[in-house]
Image 1 (cartoon, rainbow, N blue to C red):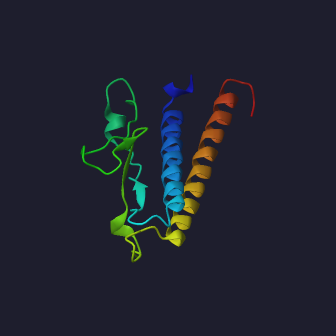
Image 2: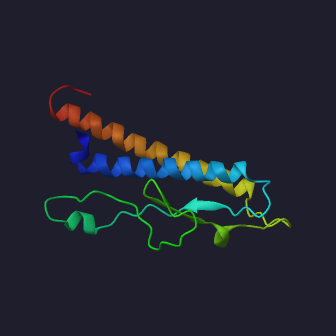
Length: 135
């Protein structure tokens, strides 16, 4: 029902992206002691301005891989890649998971998810007010 309204569709896509990123970060933490495990992350969520120019309104928002060879490929539409370029260190056993780095990323995900939830709630309240049901 609300998927026809741009703010709900975009906010919902953002929330799904953040949920997938939280899942990948949790897997990194779970494998912090696994030899040769490479930390992974989900590519950044990008709002494509071409969506606004599409004919007949905003096209469905899809997150897709740019190359078939990405490590992890796509999961639920989100591109999962190794996070080696941003890793602070590598253990002697080849593991690139840095627990402090993962905790900072999880905090960022929680903050962004809270913001997306607030936008969704406020938009729903505005919609209810517009149809005369009050907030």
